[in-house]
Image (cartoon, rainbow, N blue to C red; front, top):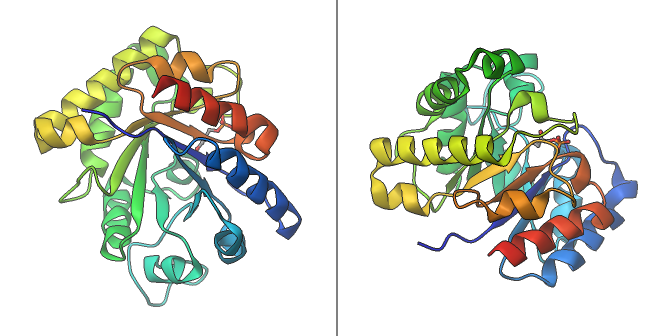
Length: 250
Ligand SMILES: O=C(CO)COP(=O)(O)O
């Protein structure tokens, strides 16, 4: 089974129109590597402008509401994001699980809402440092994954991102053995839930302090099919080498 590498940037709450030139530069970097799928999850305010300029990359949103419309002040439905130009959405990022108190059931519902509007989905899972240190990271992440997994999950619209919370924005990453163990366990759990064929086709991304220096090692691991990149995705100079590393590992 060959899975196309996916390297996606999560810009989080960063980016103004002044940064559209960076998006264009990242598109240029991506075009040199057509074997890698590259996307940017930008703030909602930038989706339309980014999608208008995006060449060589897809543009996504960082969250969507589980309902399509209604009395939900400040929220955005999947159809709105699609109309704005997004083709994909992140659900279940640990920052939203923590800051917005999103539950696994909320996240599964958001993924389904996105799917209903033909958006692809990256579903994030990951353990805290406390859970890692207690020795129960794998069982925690698998429980979280299976509870957040939407009905009808399929590899043509859903990818998983393993993002250990303690590795996000810290410059600290798990050992290669820990990443390999977790990704293998995730694929095993997907196989048990969705069947071997779907599990073999579904991309499992690693996220958390991915940079030009560590990407090549991480992407070489068998069950790592790309990365979800925060800080290093803001500039082509730092994101470009990560795309190159994914191509080399393809
Ligand atoms: O949270 C992340 C991507 O969603 C990872 O962020 P950093 O790459 O900045 O650690």
